[in-house]
Length: 139
Picture 1 (cartoon, rainbow, N blue to C red):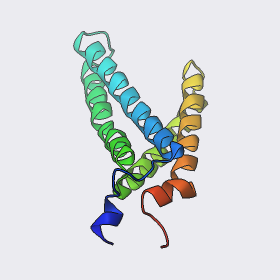
Picture 2 (cartoon, helix red, strand yellow):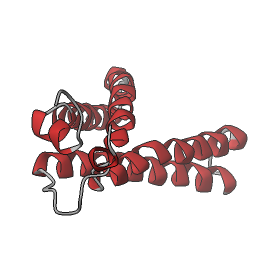
Picture 3 (cartoon, rainbow, N blue to C red):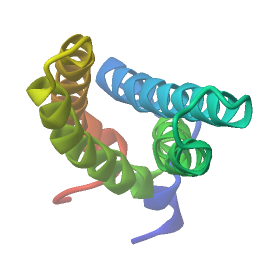
Picture 4 (cartoon, rainbow, N blue to C red):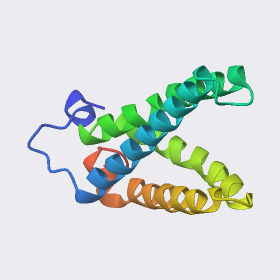
């Protein structure tokens, strides 16, 4: 694979589907940062039942946010490596969405939203226009 194939020139058009997939990955990353920050603050302020568990969970969520955020940045820059982490993020989101849907609480709408975002992003990431723009697939 040549360097031109790995790093397409800035003149290469970015399909709207690729931009949408990057936006969804970034949205998931930002949601993880916000949720993790909330847990850390709630735990540090003593508002949680188990302070250590809340802080640890929050820090873990913030650390997990790195993957979709890096993938989103790579997708926007047309880096072929970014599709793998983006797909992995969506696949990991599906069981989380399923667990949220099994809850008997206000988590059900969050589960629906997460499932819709994950499936939509997966469809966008495997789209032929996306793979072509990233230089993935048969030549």
